[in-house]
Image (tube, rainbow, N blue to C red):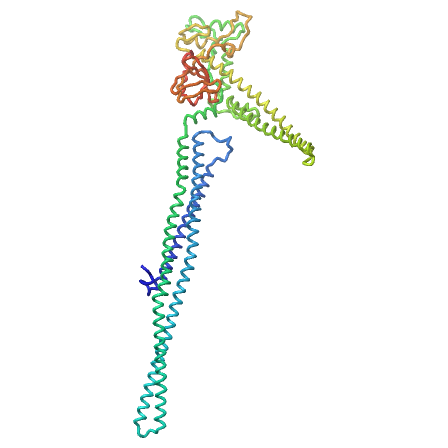
Length: 565
């Protein structure tokens, strides 16, 4: 249906309708603008949220727990998601809002042009009508004047008293008025014919053409709205694959949380390396009291110990005090740790933590040394180039920097040597402590048929507490008098390590590195040495093969009260 033929007389309504269409287009543009503002603010708030909860410390100080790493991965994916919201806002701004604003301006200009043409055509038709109307009124007026002249002539012609000159004059006036009326008639007829022609052209050519242009403009506006609706949806659709990847990344981060790994990191981070405090020995303060045989009281002190005390030899009491003093020095492990100043060699830290700190410092010093060495080599090469080509630079200008670099290298090497000596000291102490712990397990964790220090079994539980640890026989003066709390000399390195527990493999391990052990999933192995904080446990297979396995790959059961085999 065409507006030109169906709505030929609705110029005013079409003017209102086209104005409403442009207003609706601008209203939709405003909606898109507010929507992209929401997207931009949402993306900005998401980025601020990610920035707020992202770690502000260096990577070395960041916790290594899988739950923390997964959370940081989730934040990273959320930041990427915020970027996609910004992409949506940008697409809406360029392809929808910007396009609508440009098109709205074009529509306003085109509508104004068409309406001006319609008004001009209407004004021309009105002008033609006025000309026709004026000629009509003139014709009507001349006809009335001619009628009056006719009446005057007839009256004078019938009047016998009228003179001939008056009759002739009236006759001439009648002729003049009649001629003028005929001319006005002809003019009116011409104007009428012209107006009818212009009116036909107006309503059959000009107005239909103008209204058709307005119809085309309005239909293009409708099409443009449909296209922008589609672009509005496509802006969202384009980011769906990347948003899905972001969500998949969040799910993967959630699956990466490993409670066993986090527990192992806690052990690795806070393990001190100290041994648990031993039992408090019984101190008998009643030994100096005189007792008679009739008291019926039996002294718990062995006779041999009493004689040695009288002779001034080393007895149980001296050993108990020594052990007690050693135990008291470690009570802070289960209480409040005393504050100690931070020292360069980290001696204020527990052994295991001290070893880790020293190792980290060594790695950092080695990196700095490598950097300074590379810089020195580069300076030397540059100096050689300057010496061969003096026009490129003065070789002596590099000497201060070379001297400074050499001083830094010497300082770093001294620091590395010093820290390596401290690290060797710590590792040596941990090794001797591990040997003592194994020896202590062999001597104290025995079944109910307890093995005495002399190698025989006894069922008397009291003798276990009052029998001193193995020490040289006083009747053999040739043997050195060792510290009763040192077991390193008693441990035979040639003997196989005792079994202190067993484990079940949760995952398979290929054991490609030297010193490692190959294991299959669900395989059961013997534990012969616990993890010392480095993430490796020493194990033995059924066939006697020994090696190290990852602690996090197995489920370990330590048989602390069983006799080693």
